[in-house]
Length: 132
Image 1 (cartoon, rainbow, N blue to C red):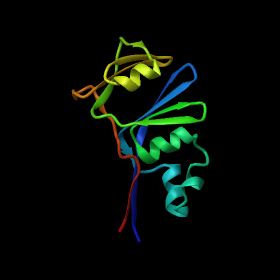
Image 2 (cartoon, one colour):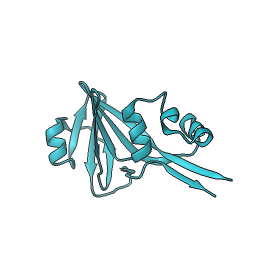
Image 3 (cartoon, one colour):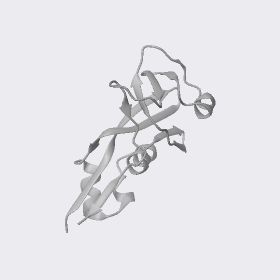
Image 4 (cartoon, helix red, strand yellow):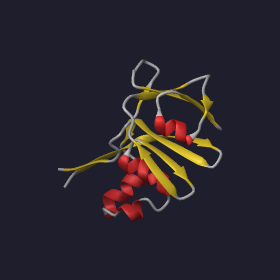
């Protein structure tokens, strides 16, 4: 039995007590998480060293928003890129219209449906797991 698996790369942003995790490319084919999952086939065991938000980002992709123990998963078409402009991130504004530029504690990001050479594509799939 041969197992092929991968997870997205995770970009982490913070705004006050809110964590935003963006799943993107390139896909990762070797990690502690994947090795554990291949051995145990147990997601809970494989996620034991990760926060719940990190585990969700690896498993389901998309944009994961974490406030304390509450998680919200947003599936966005398109991409994001680092920017030098952005309005202060507010969760309600983002959920109503995520395509724009936002300022976080650790950087500024613009989300767009239009891809260009500086944009990183958002991965809305998450874990890929194939058994041959």
